[in-house]
Length: 297
Image (tube, rainbow, N blue to C red; front, side):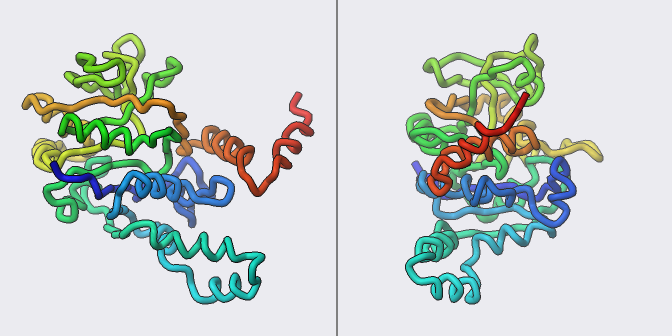
């Protein structure tokens, strides 16, 4: 069984929910206190053993490339001149470019979350890989990617990262998997229904945030693309349903011991920033005192 060492992050969207802020700055670069959202995702991938990260971008995403590039000489010199006072900042920015091998690919093809996968198939080859979003993440121990990789190493098939639905509206936002339980937290998937509504959902296990795909998904994406009608979007779920029809095994894996953060909309983004600010070591509890001082009546 081949080790999982590659990951794909789609990042070509326009981030229209955050306009006008995202007119010039990618939504993936929105800060969670002092670190962009996408860096949390990258660091989690690296911690799980990922070496090569392919980021599928658009023409307006150059700042993502700049962020993970080596820091410019002016910035390095400025931090060095500050001596010990800013030594930790120098170390912090220098290590970013060394986190992994970064490759950037421009997205081409029909709209939909299946297209970025086809754009990098020549880089993935015949290997399993992680496919994960750039604007949400799960904080868990062990990490969600380690949990997915552990499950893959045991069963040798595609694994869908999943969380339990907590409110009725979740059933209108995510895809849900149904099938037989191999364990209380793993479903041997028989069906996947996108945004089923609570009454029609096959389970309470929502497929979100990150997935581990086996390379045969590319064959099924090709088939889905061939049957795609004009103006329709290409979704990876189209390929997964074709895989299920061919009796390919897919598992829905509940990520245990974690909390899901969705920074893709304003409210959840602000909640995430506040929660991380409350725990940030440099703020020394001052932010909590400030929040307590507000008259929120």
